[in-house]
Amino acid sequence: MTVAKVLADFEERSWDFRGTRLRGLVAGPSGADAVVLLHGLGGAASNWALLAPELARRRRVVALDLPGHGWSAPLPAAPGLGSYADAVAAVVEQERLGAVDLVGHSFGGLVSIRLAVRRPELVRGVVLAAAAGISSHTRWAERVLALLGWVQPGRRISPYWKAVAASDALKGLVFGRWFADDPAALSPVAVEAVLRDINLNTDTDSAWRALTQDDPRADLHRVRCPALVLWGASDNQLPLEDAFDFARRLHAPVRVIAKCGHLLIVERPDACLDAIETFLDAADLAA
Image 1: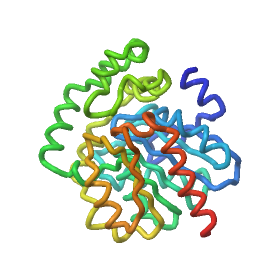
Image 2: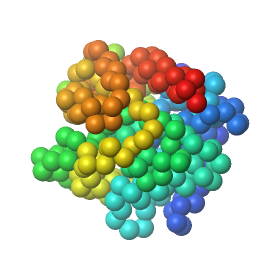
Image 3: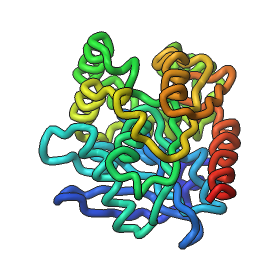
Image 4: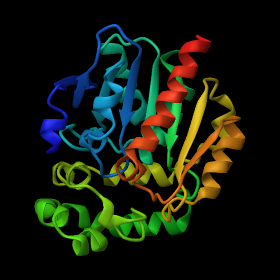
């Protein structure tokens, strides 16, 4: 099984945002409640390959390449987080989705928060999956991300994703410590979903700069929609303390996934799907 086969039912779409071409994948019943999936820094829509098809069984699902990532063009000026949120809002409006649920991983979680604050009428609920914004708003994080942006290890590794997927040793080297709790357990589809499209990214520098300059904590009280905080118990990149800080400020429940690191959406897609669908179903009943 490959990512292409897993996402075979998804239609590739493109949208215009202030002269920038955005690209994403769309599937699910037309007219159903919509879920927009936002990947992390340096990621792409394909990161959601293990979750998107299951969510699309009952809902309209849009998995978006954020600006400068995957097949989406970069924004013309160095943007703040607001520009990324506005780009997502443009897709929601052009697709005529109404109010949507946002599921954001890492950087995508922070974009979700910004959209919920800026355009509350477009956001019905938010799932923050290992969301950035607290520990990432430090001088140490800025220096690390600047170094990674210069070295660009992901782009160097991306062409060899098949070799990584076939080797437990290489999975350990690529995903160990900072990304996955048990790299050897990652399926070939999970490895492909994370690595395949990294070499397409054209502007992750703007994203990490916007990330490190944005501290959402002062604005979290302005998020009026229901929220769920979803975290890997063994996340060494964004600590579990961040999850409880988000939850306290948002008055939101926390679901912690055991034996799981930062890449929870591919490490434990079964547990993530259960948590997300339980949250969305509860929102349906409350509506």
